[in-house]
Amino acid sequence: MIQKHKNECGMYGDIKLFAGTGSHYLAQKISDYLSVPLSKQKVNHFPNDNLWVRLKSSIRGQDVYVIQTTSRPVHRNIMELLITLQTMRLDSAGRVTAVVPYLSYARSDKKDKPRTPITARLIADMIEVAGADRYMTLDLHAGQIQGFFSIPGDVLSAFHILTDNIARMLPQMTDPVVLTVDLGFAKKGRNFAAVLDLPIAFVEKRRRGKKDKAQAITLIGDIADRDVIIVDDEVDTAGSVVKAVKLAKEHGARNIYLTFVHPILSPPAVERLAKLPLTKIIATDTVPISPEDQTLLGDKLQICSVAPLLGEVILRAHEGRSVGEMFNE
Image 1: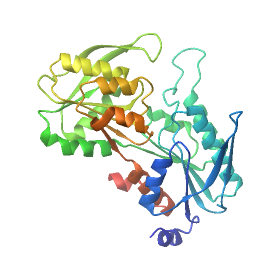
Image 2: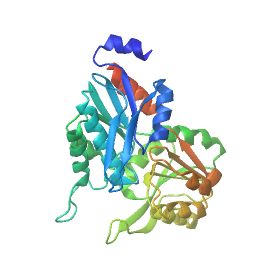
Image 3: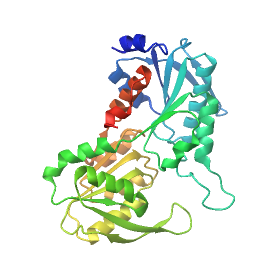
C-alpha cells in the first residue's frame, strides 16, 4: 500500500525509518504499524562522551524519519538526534523528518526573569540547522513553541488516546470528575473533561522560589464522594501529583485515577507514585519507562502507545495527505 501511494505522490522515495537509542521500542512499534523495517545505523559512544553515527545503507533521495525522544539522558539523546540529522542531510536524503515524541526544555519557553535563556527556541533552531526539513512532536508544554520552528511540522496530541481509554472505564466509576493539578493546565483539562462530558475541578497552586518548588493551596470544585481523574501533560518528580492526591482525599474523593502523556518520572517520582492511593496510572510511551519502574508500579500502570498515531501521521506526510482529517479538522 505504501509503495502504491508513493508512486502516486511522486514527491520522495521510499519511507526510511531510523530508531534513536532513546526510542527504540517505540520506533519498532511504528515500524510494525507501517510494515516498514527499521533501517540500521551504528552509534558509537566514545570514552570521552563524543558520539559518532554511521548509516548502514544509502538514503539518497529517500523520505527519512528519525524517531528519537529527548528525555533522560537528555543531552546525549539531543546530540544523537542532531548528529543523526546531519548525517542524513550529508547523505543526500530527499526529505528528513525529526520525530521527537517528547521535546526537552519545553518549559523554558519564555524569559520570565532577567538574564535567562529561552532554551526551547535554541532546541528548535538546532534541529533545523542540523538538517531536519520537518518535525513531529506530541503535547508541547506551551503552544507558542510551535512558533520557534521555521520548518513545517505536526504538533500532535495524545489526549484523545487517553480519553478513549478513560471512556472505557467510566461505567465502573462513581460520579466521576476531572481534576487538574494546577490552574495553568485548566484549559487543556477543560477540553479533556468536555470530551468525556464530565465536570471539572482544579487545584490552585502557587509557586514560590525555584520553579520545581510549589505549594498546593486549595481545591476548587466538588469532588466529595466521587471518583477523581487527575490529568496533566507530564509527570516529572510527581510532587504536584502527591499534593493533588492529598487534597483530593481531604475533600472526600473516592477512587483516584492519574492520567498523563509524558512519563518523565525523575527520581523519586516512581517511589512516590507507588505509595499513593491510586487506582490506576495511565500514561503513554513517548518516554520509555524502565522495566524496574514498571515492576515497582505494578498492575496500577497502564501504558497506551502513541505508535499508531505517529505511524499514521508519518504515512500521511509521506503520501501528501491531510493530517487534520484524522481529527475531523
